[in-house]
Length: 273
Ligand code: HPA
Image (cartoon, rainbow, N blue to C red):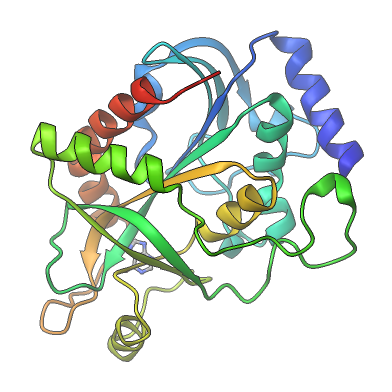
């Protein structure tokens, strides 16, 4: 895997000398932030050696390097999911590549179902902690010290300073943002009523099919992590309706301007040395 990372990095660096300090992974229906980037290089996933290719139509499948709020960033416009048939090693490979390109922090977004009865469709939820219900782990298998820690600490996966900054920005800008626990499930089916009840009972505020694998690898690599969910539907008793992907995408699109504002402001205030 270390050789594969080096090959991917070598290819990207043959296209651009740009050195990113912050990585961003844009979730389902949340790719428009890319329009805010002063792009220096745009590389389609298919071109990058060993990169999986995104099969989800709502994901663009491009790596963008450039400036956001004046800071050097690398953006994954579209991510990989376990439900597409990739192993979690493949799903998280781009995180390792971004780390090797020089990022120090990783910001992730996703579309999620709300479990907390206070949540409404279109709300943002700052991820304070997570529960991993993926049936695999991206770190399973033979270990090499070059990959990072064998047993990464997970007592505080989401960077407290970035969380505080984001709350401050949301307050200043009047953005409706909750803070809660994200639980990851493999999908691709959505939850039954009983499953939503179960996920609430075990302590989650929102449920989705991504993010946790990437965060585990990011923490293995000692990246500072920041995560936000956009609540696109509700798994709250009495409010559960049949959900479709078009509904999820429409809700994500409505919430996106708030997410974009928050992300731009947060990036502007991050130290990118
Ligand atoms: N469940 C799981 N994943 C999701 C949901 C949901 O309700 N909404 C968006 N992604």
